[in-house]
Length: 113
Image (cartoon, rainbow, N blue to C red; front, side):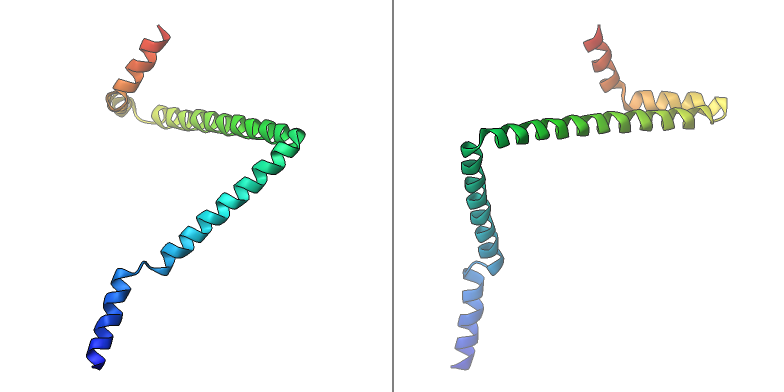
């Protein structure tokens, strides 16, 4: 009899969803409620909605500028690395990098022409 109860409990655990699933579902419901509440408050106050919109645009613009700066910084360090190499290695590395990015470089050149 006890073996049957143990088996029944183990099988029910396999069939029933885990508590993590319930917690995730409750989180999603809470997020949806918060979103609805915030949207309602933004509809009531268009100035706040516009301020949030402008702040978000500024944030996105700053992230784009950050990415551009990081790209320029990486490029500068790569150039520094290449110019510090001995001439025979420099040519080999330059060819390897070009081959690695040939497709992307060709696409950029094609777009600019």
